[in-house]
Structure formats: C-alpha cells, structure tokens
Amino acid sequence: MMKAEGPQPARLRHAPSWLLGQASMHSHRLIGERFAAEGVRGYHYRLLAALEEFGPSSQAALGRSTGIDRSDVVAALNEMAAKHLIERSPDPDDRRRNVITLTQVGSRHLKELDGVVTEIQDTLLAPLTPAERATLTDLLSRLVDHHTRP
Image (cartoon, rainbow, N blue to C red; front, side, top):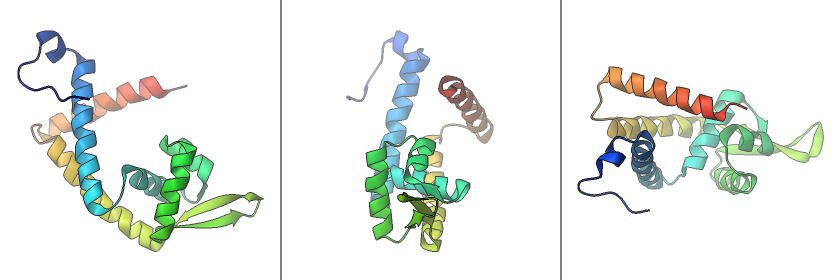
C-alpha cells in the first residue's frame, strides 16, 4: 500500500477510518522495524505475553487468544523453541496435544521486548500528551471491544 504524501483531500483528513488506517500503517512499520532489529517478530511478543498472562497453554488456545493462525503459531513456536524461549511437553490429558510453557529465558526476553514496545509507543504517540495518550487508548479499546464481541 502506498503512503499518502502531501496534502490529502479533506474527506480523508476528517474520516476516522482513513486516519486509523494511516496510524495503523505507521504503527506496523515501527513494530516491524524495531522487532526485526531485535531478531523477533510481533507474533513472538504476542505469544510470550499470552503465555505469561494465561500460563501454559495448548497451541490451539494460544492461536485463539492471540488471533494468530494455527500454522503461523506452529512456525513461531518452532522459532521460539530454538531460542529456548518456550518448552513443549505432551499434554497429560491428551498425548496428541502439546502444552507450551514459558521458560525463564522467555520471561526475561519478554521483559526486554516490553521495553521495546514502550519505545515504539513513545515514538508513535510522541505528538500527544500523557492525558491524550490515555484518552486515545481508552477510545481505541472501546472500538476494538465493540467490534470484537461475539
């Protein structure tokens, strides 16, 4: 997708959907660049965060809680296992399924990535005051919650 440059039509400058799309593209670029510099992908952060918050989980449950497609979950977990960020073990209730657990190395790595995410947020939201950042986050949360409820 091409980045809008120069003056934009007023219809676009005042359309929340357009503005959200532009902010989203900028955010994805920042995340991609910073995570690539750390040798990780956004999927890794999402999966590590879910494991820390929810505890050991099946691959399928991780996919559901993070919104990551099953095949992408498997690929990301393979990469993370190679770096000793997670461990796989057979589920005692169903040997066909693996339980994924966050390792101490993974927990430390997640904390490092939390710092990277904070830097990304600061860059993305630099023009806003702390109060404006909180308001924006609250409003975006309401929109997301409204559109993702079953």
